[in-house]
Length: 422
Image (cartoon, one colour):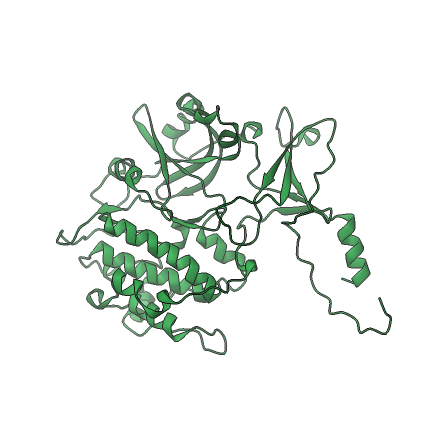
């Protein structure tokens, strides 16, 4: 480097996660390794799976975390020599045995016998109002090594208590998912795989979306929002899923960022149908209270009879506003929410966040206080913002939600940092 050349601006080196010239780390004679291709961690995906890097899996016989000599670890190595750790390791058959507790003694007794039903439980990945989600290996696919070892499934067990203020019992909620979810086939609706029943307890086997939820995606950013072009892409996927559900006569009634999952291909899928009902035009209005704070329509909070499909539209507006601004449109406190709901929706100042006029008009239409004046799905679909083509989407805007954790910096990266004074 020329000494007279002005000093380069120091910048933080971004972790090199996906690359074409990756290496497999040296094998240890004391442990067995399994090398497999993994999808790129950045960029939007096409139908063809790309394998830019490799994951090395080291397994031990005991799998006890307190035994430092027998730790189970999973690593990836890139061309800079960095080593990375993944949250959900593969192959699944080498996954360490862990004690799984759902918080419900009846379902805890069921866990050891899940293998008899063809599913090996691996770990609890989520607990919510509608039950417990368990990561599991599908033993039915043993004949297909790739599907069995590298494609986990999600078991949803209805371990939650009966919902208050609802005339439906927990069994009815689970029955809805058992009877109706299997009939839904859409790229942006979570895929039903199977149902399980054991000694009077029910569960559903669902597609596993390894990149978490839309809520987690937003929290990755310090600003907690996405660019408008990325918001457009994601919102179109959510809208497509809701439009399909409504055409099938199903109202979701609990649309929120927590119930929208992200696949490894950066595709969004609507999940959690614990509050969903079959509803057609002309059916009696609903009066039961449901939904998630911050996404509930005003008519639900005020205990007025409501059309659940129209309330879903309000929830869509809340999700859109949250994605493009990073905050809830009317807050989370009920008294403040109702006070602001009857006023015009406010947006951040243009000097702080520049949003297009078409986007603001759509949000205002979706978040109209009077349900009769609220945008319909058809009007939303043909709004100016939805018809725009946002083709300039930066690769950095799409990424794995659960980024690998860097274990050690490679020698090559250290040399580069030293060379450029980083």
